[in-house]
Image (cartoon, helix red, strand yellow):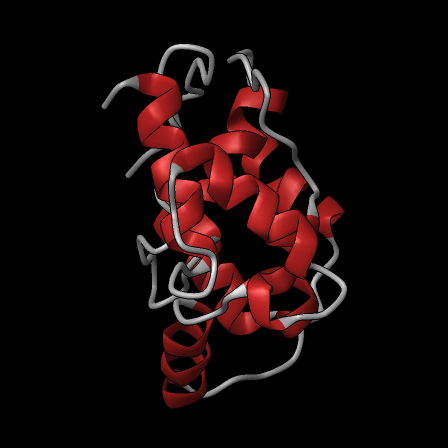
Length: 147
């Protein structure tokens, strides 16, 4: 039941693989939104970003609706329930399958992102061909925050 704004200059946002209501990305999205809108510090993180939109676009929910929920003080679990009841209807199985698939996304396989991802992985000593997007984000956080 997290409604507290983090100082994301002092601690990492939650891993994108952490699931709330079976949704990956959501906990991280909410950490960043709370930091931005509830008096925390968003640091180098970006809100309303491509990662957030992987979830929001799949559910067809505008970021502004999530922002309203965050500002109103909704918990992670309440916002997961909001996702369940708004936007494009998805079954529990579809949410599970989507989240499982998102954990396997590797930008290196996308010709438009290959060079960027290879460069980002090189900074962390990761093999871009074997590193998922979530693994890269987690390692970047680990290195940045020495966790």
